[in-house]
Image (tube, rainbow, N blue to C red; front, top):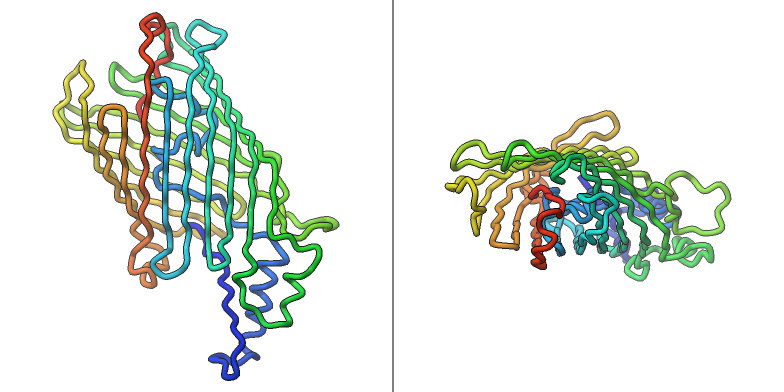
Length: 367
């Protein structure tokens, strides 16, 4: 669960609604958290763990049965009772068909993440380039190990003009060491493994480490011995899933993810299901799938439920459309009336038909 950022709305008034003696310690704490320290929450997360592969792991770059892949995701959260989060993720990746081994391959990709949160419009922009190598572990290129790395820039920006504060807090904003925007280089890497199970089934698993170099993102410069919270927390991601045909009409696409960053751990587990007659040899032109996931988190030694994620997905030729809604079942359920937020995603594949290389291109799983 992503924590809500502090909301600063202190307005001068001759007749305050709350006595200043009560409000003062709260205001001091909020201003100190926002201006003296960076906002050290975990990274943005998406409910569509099956529709954001390169966002989970750089090793997923180029892992698909086509030449090009374009992905777009949008998510809104906590907008039912606060000025919450708006997150957009766009990526494009491709295979270069230039591996050392006869069945090996090389993938390259680009990803951009934009996020805005809270009344102060705290903005995060993350732009990265990724490179992966797909090493075939068998002669037909269906079982392989992938390693990937991503380098990029993370920028965070805070709009202090939207903060309405008592005059005594002005020094926090006008301090010459305070900067409203900070940028840092970011380095991430990961591994992934894919194995077929029979003709139509497969399983995949991966692990990645983000923010390996721990970029500095504090809003106060010229600090001596800056605290640990001024640097990006490393994030560990463990994920996996598969495609399993249960019988002639029923197919499952389970997936899971485990996130560990700073004091926060998140778990997400669920599956898509499709009920549709399937030909043994011909892939259907369209497929309708329904799914549900359960997300919970651990923080400060406590394990808490977060959300139920209901999804519907429509695969049509080379395009996948997915819509989901987070049903809040956390301690905030009463305040939010069980409303979390919607998420939409589109994945589109482009394949340049080249008969001369169809026989040796890497066989990748379908997500």
